[in-house]
Length: 243
Image (tube, rainbow, N blue to C red; front, side):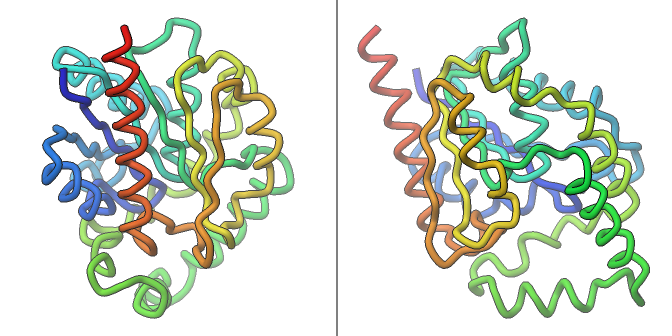
């Protein structure tokens, strides 16, 4: 059976952030589903809730699992939510998991500071869109530069989503994950802060640090990230052939 891939975006962005990965997976013959979480992309008019996010991921995973082993790939906020999802006690049908740019425990001073900075950014003229576009134009290659904002920016969902992350029990979830797990971080990613802790708790995890890359590792180095997708898909294919 062919490996199925489900992609979960990060905060403020949408399924469009995965365009380079979707094209790559389709070219290699792996069916792929990129979801929009509540309050994001095509669902901008909805309110973000953790239950809604879990339900969105689960619906895509359960559907994909009817056709083959599922590789779940998530970024940033989507990665944190997906860790909780993959590591829940009633194990979902996920055969492998890539968690990108999400090795930070979203609690305490760190989360409070991040929310404060996000609110300050949101208070800028045009909600800081001009600054976001300038940063992206200077850091992302032309082939992915438009992808992060193509589905719109979920400004209204941002603080709600960030606040909700504090209830996640990531360490317990990580300890329960018993499928191949890859943490992928950019060298200069601010969410590497608890990288060693995550790696110590997760029993089946590997860490890949992409040089000269920030938090937006999927878009800044799309060919590198796509190569990591190939490794994960090949790993699941090999495991399935060994069964």
